Amino acid sequence: MKERWKEKRGLTLLGNIISYLKEYGSKSFQEYHFCEVDILVLAQLSYLKFDGAVPALGERKKAVTLLKINEIMNPDKVFEDKWYEKQNRELWSTLLSCKRYQRMKCNYYRSRLDEENVTQFGAITFFPEGCEPVVAFRGTDGSIVGWKEDFNMVFSKPIPSQMESALYLEQVSCRIPGSFMVCGHSKGGNLAVYSSIWADGYVQQRITDIYSLDGPGFVPEVISGASYENIRDRIHRILPYSSLVGMLLQNYEFYEVVKSSAFGPRQHDCYTWEIEDGAFVKAPDIEAKQKRMNEVLNQWIFSLPEEERMLFVNALFETIEQTKVLTVSEFAENWQKNLKLCFKHMRKFDATTRKRFRQIFKMLFEIYGSVLRGRQHEGMEQEFHADEK
Image (cartoon, rainbow, N blue to C red):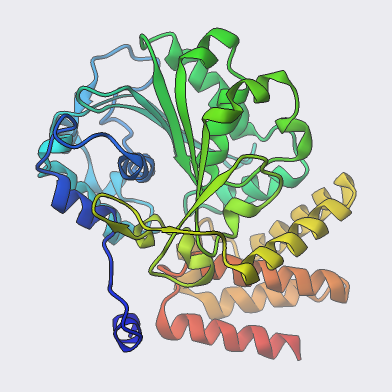
């Protein structure tokens, strides 16, 4: 359907990170330079669950190549997150066949999911052959815990994964010599910036570039002071044309915009970012309509006292907890029952709060477009409209 829509308007379907690898994967980094698209590849690769396959930070073992990982890994574990599972499997198989990445080594893996302390964190350090090491922070996965921690950003300073990221960067910087880069997609982009802000001066000097790929911003207190100013000019923010996540909270850095084959919040999906001739296809700015919506959302967030933000987030996830699900995929598997449980619980709140809850649910479902497809998504839209009446 999407392809036909583009053909009717005389548009050309462009590539994504997988087609980029198929076209440039036969070239070493000496034959075709390490670029922003490679950063996106590594940021997406950090979502995979490499527990037991990549040496953990405290193990002091030798780094392993992708081919070695493939020999010893448990695929069910590596691809356990159902969000973009099909695309992640294709990305992995494509990387294994690429001269460009076959000899890249991986080390210092860390992963944590803690429901009690509302923490979802992951990080890994990549060593592309002949290039600077890249510290990559995992973004939000499909867990409800991960999403709750993200929402806690609006009142908690810092959230647990931000503290984890600062500790991880400090520990890894002691194990790798020379300069390096830091990156992440979604929450991982936020962690890349946060950890770099809180690194000590010597470590900051060694960071050449910091990439936040559609990563949310911060409450104002985080990005003020000399430590932030020291690394500000090395922060690269890359956002899709209809960015929602990357425009949340405050971001003072300049940003670049990449076109996407998806629509609305679904552009948060890295696999929809358009690539041509080995580079992102850029747009002049964020879509005007989306920009206005983002400004309204941020104004609403910052108009609430911090205590009210906390109460709102806790109430939102108290509503989701009525379903007993642990992941968005589980929610989608029985969405009619789960949505009705949420709507039933929402009736205890005032009309304004209920309206905000519905808006946030719809936003999350849009972002998880790969999980909630076709008739499922259409059915949810009908449920939302029915509940509003």
